Structures are given as C-alpha cells and as structure tokens.
Amino acid sequence: MIASQAGVAAVKVSLDGFDTHGNQPGTHARLLKELAGGLVALRAALVELGRWNSTLTMTYAEFGRRPRENLSNGTDHGTANAQFVLGGRVRGGLYGLRPGLARLDGNGNPPFAVDFRDLYATVLERWWGVNPARALNARFAPLDILKA
Image (tube, rainbow, N blue to C red; front, side, top):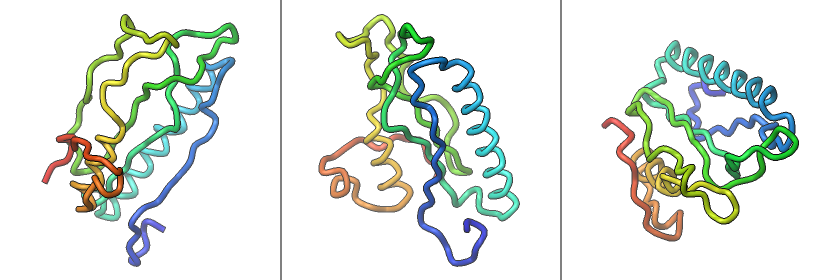
C-alpha cells in the first residue's frame, strides 16, 4: 500500500501483546525485537522507494507501565510512556527528562516529561499543516523534532 502511487495520508499498524502483568521480561524482549525488525524493514523499503524523507512514523500506546515490578514478574498500568518518532526529517535524540523514579505519585507512577499531546501537536502543525488547537481542543506546544 505504501509503495502505490495513489498516495496514502496515514497507515496504522498494530503490535499487540504489551499488556503484560506477568512474565514480562521475555515477552517484552520478543515484542521489542519484532517492533525493531519491523521498523528497520519499513525504513529500508522507504529508502528504496525514495520516500524516507517524506514519511513520518510514530509509535504510541494507550497506557504506560509502572516501574515497580508486581508479584507476577510484570508491571501494571501506569501513566508515563515512551514514544518513538522516525523519518528522514526527524531530528534524532531523546526529548524530555529522564523518568523521575524518585518522584513517584501515590499510585507508583513517575511524572511524564513530555505531554503526548505536544507530540500530536507537532505532527498536526509541522507535518500536516493543520491547526492542532482545533483537533486537540486546546493549545499544546509543538516539539522541535522535525527538520524543514
């Protein structure tokens, strides 16, 4: 589909299985290896097609994980999470502060360093040229992660 000449505005691909409340280490290692392999293959295909610089890839998850291990060798739902953004116009690097493990809230969650809506505002405004305030029902600060 991405290789077609029709032009595709957005594609969603899912990788399920990260909701691991038990036996997490092996499962996450396998899933992260699968994710990495898929992203490497996607990049290679986009470079071959000459579309790496005109494609933006972003990961997201519906919830984070708490840092403390539970009694089942897993972790429970949390509030903070990591996201990856890839593409030929993406400025590499880490954005935000390290997780505040010394500042967990009453439920054992670290504070988030970057509001995910700031990342969405970045994509909307700086990639698609759309007013993010209309889509997000508020104003969020775009991140300086994209090259012109």
